[in-house]
Length: 92
Image 1: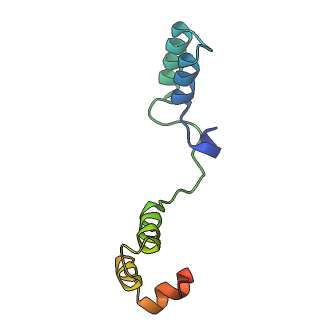
Image 2 (image 1 turned 90 degrees about the vertical axis):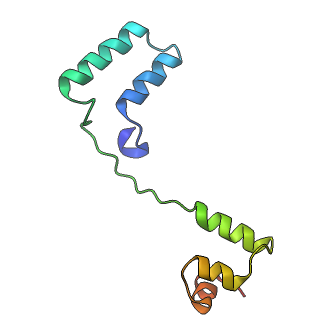
Image 3 (image 1 turned 90 degrees about the horizontal axis):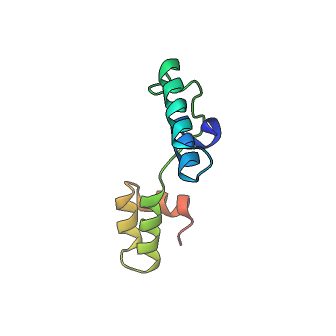
């Protein structure tokens, strides 16, 4: 789970407790073991996924589609020349 989704072992155990899958006592026992093994500060498995934000681009293209901004303004906000912006984003 950690490798694929980036969810910490502690979060998984806590969620299992929230859902009633394990008791408060088991939660405490997991945390004791995590502490003893040093997993509270550094888990044994690393997250291998790559994340990137596209929120700015979504907002930019929505503003462009709804004609709140011009194509040249959108290009400027993306720090691109107008021709480069048009070519990269297939804007006519």
